[in-house]
View 1 (tube, rainbow, N blue to C red):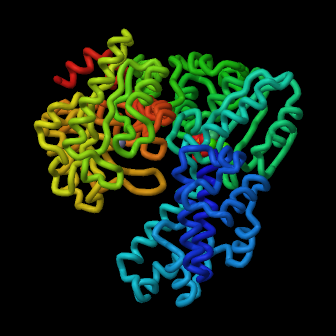
View 2 (cartoon, rainbow, N blue to C red; view 1 turned 45 degrees about the vertical axis):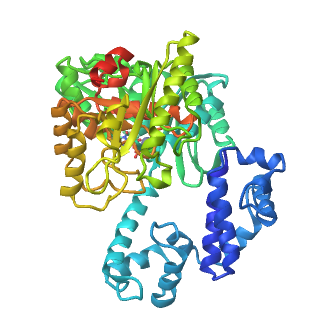
View 3 (cartoon, rainbow, N blue to C red; view 1 turned 90 degrees about the vertical axis):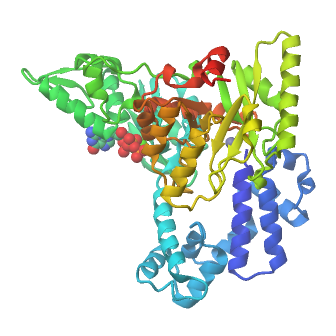
Amino acid sequence: MKNREVAALLYQMAELLELHAENRFKIIAFSKAARAIESLPEDITVVCKEKRLQSVPGVGKAIAQKVEEYLRTGKIEAHQELLAGTPPGLVELLQISGLGPKTVSLLHEKLNITNLQELEAAAREHRIRRLPRMGPTRETNILKSIERYKKRSTRILYSTAEPIVNDILARLRDMEGLEHITVAGSFRRARETVGDIDILATASRPEEVVAAFVRIPLVEEVLAQGPTKASVIVQETIQVDLRIVEHQSFGTVLQYFTGSKEHNVRLRQLALSRGFSLSEYSLTRLADSRDIFYDREEDVYAALGLPYIAPEMREDRGEIEAALRGALPQLLELKDIRGDLHVHSDWSDGRASILEMANAAMALGYEYIALCDHSPSVGIAGGLDPEKLERKIKAIAAVNESLQQKEIDFTVLAGTEVDIKADGRLDYPDDLLARCDVVVASVHMGLQQSERSITGRLISAIENENVDIIAHPTGRIIDEREAYEVDIQAVLKAAARTKTVLEINSYPSRLDLNDVNSRAAKEMGAMLCINSDAHDAKQLLNMKYGVNVARRAWLERNNVINTLPLKQLLSLLRR
Ligand code: DGT
Ligand code: CA
Ligand code: CA
Ligand code: ZN
């Protein structure tokens, strides 16, 4: 779907118009249309084809024409003109969170700032705090945003890389003479973000594969092209490297380019201690300089006396030592997941009905799903007042009854995502929580509080016997928001002590708990749960991203409660 792409462009037009101090109504029209298209549940391309653009609220004739122009030609003339009339450095400044057009033009007028570098210098020299409406806090926040922006421009979410990887593999896989093709690097290790995408292949006619690769429609720019490799840019900033290697070395090459660098360093040390030198081409026996080639990666590990180590574990976080001791975990797999314990419905801010969510979960082979809509204090998310939650519990009972009548072995659990309020209390009375099958508690407000307050709020929720799961325990959103100040060790400890479950939220930009914290949770004896936090049926599929985190955290099936059959799950939740 191009909805987000189109919305981003319209948002940018609104900002540029404001930067140029254009007509206020025009500016409002653009941002209104952008917002409507962003949250449109339908594919904008389809809406455009069926000539229904103007039926989208907030999209008038002029904007409809521009959207149509974009979908037809890939650009909007008026947008290009606005860009041409703005210093490129200023356009970049608009992307920094907390910097709107008003601030950018102020900085431009008063301090003659035209780019990121000048902005950073001005902030460090405390020239910004003296401007009207700014002050020291804003100045510090601008510096923080610049730091975040710099990090963000270099890495993309795993879920952004995924369709690119799939598209490239699908287009090359069936070429004649192609033997192996696979993704390596951080993507293969399933890191939450990816710097660039590394693809490896073996083929009888490498040049033809390279030629086909650089011609893939996704490719926008070719940075380098040789007989056996090429580097290209897709989606403006994402680099993809393809290397075609000798079949006989495929095992060592795949091992090398999967990384991580730190894992490889340790593996080479181990090889040396056993009388070998390990390179991407071969394993060389030091005694007689004889090269041994491996076309399978498992054989490289076996030659060093190791069992196969899953790519997700290759971070030099003790995996080689564990492998030597024969103590590698049996990593959890997506197929072990039997249900999803945190999804939303149209009772709050979800887009699908209870039955639609249940049907989608059944289609995935799940045995249960817990509908956990928001509580009242999360007003913007349409939180349910107590009376409405009671009605929802009844509605879910009715759905279960009809499933039973049809002899369908699937259960909808009545749940809630109850807010842990700024004062630490929960947003529903205990007797109502006690009547839910699953209570997920989470922090949405008071994110700026001190570490002591936030940790205290989380621990008091953990200690409430009605709370089963703490959702997205640190609140971070990748590239957007740091975790709130929290003593995570104390939270993990309290969870382990009270048998409160910690969530790995699978939303691609949350992945919270992350790999390191999830592993710490396991080591402290806390249980985890991997949930999609889906707001529509399609987002149930995000579960795989949470499973990635779990595998990177060394989790096994018995560390994760939603691998349990329903009966055992309910008895574990003691309900
Ligand atoms: P990224 O792209 O930043 O998300 O991370 P990676 O791990 O994909 O790193 P990348 O693309 O620079 O290189 C891919 C793999 O190649 C890396 O994981 C390990 C291997 N590699 C690259 N450079 C070195 C190196 O200098 N030493 C060693 N031992 N391995 C390297
Ligand atoms: Ca990479
Ligand atoms: Ca690379
Ligand atoms: Zn949620």
